[in-house]
Image (cartoon, rainbow, N blue to C red):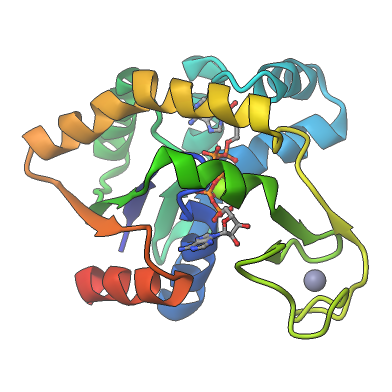
Length: 214
Ligand code: AP5
Ligand code: MG
Ligand code: ZN
């Protein structure tokens, strides 16, 4: 099963993708995570991407399309994949359709996690993750069971994303509405997209997703 999770910054794409990954044995492909890994490596592409990401702008389509194209070919995608943060522009959606056709693959579900912009600043500014295993947390909505200790690996170091501040979040939301909004119409026009209410609790959103995925 291959799916696309659409949703604004902070909608819960990453949070839900991890749960779907565990429940269905398919792999999360987050273009944001790939770009952050590239930035951490210090490569020229990574440095270019980091400047754009920290300004809340999208990176060029060509960079993302080639990155995702080679990632889908890896053996761990054979059972299926969850696209988290891709496609994000209509040219990316068109390139994805062409790429999948070439590879003899298809997308089974396109699901939009619908949220209100106003709540997203709080979600994003309160987000942090385990420095060792990457498990995601939130200051208010998703605390570790024992304060300061990762539930998954027992790690005690945590980190925050450099683009998770109020000013950048506003730019990211603007980019989402301008560039990614039209994708919802692109898939809806083809009768391919469904929506879940992302303003519900994390568990409830997972239940809605499982209702669609079966
Ligand atoms: P990316 O990493 O994809 O960031 P984003 O789209 O801004 O989305 P986030 O990761 O911030 O939010 P999320 O929906 O994953 O929310 P999460 O589950 O963490 O992209 C970053 C940048 O990379 C872009 O700005 C761009 O520059 C570049 N980029 C990436 N892909 C690109 C592409 N295809 N083309 C061009 N550029 C690209 O949840 C957020 C927080 O809320 C967490 O703390 C969580 O615990 C909490 N939470 C989640 N769900 C709920 C809930 N239901 N109730 C309460 N709290 C919740
Ligand atoms: Mg994410
Ligand atoms: Zn951890």
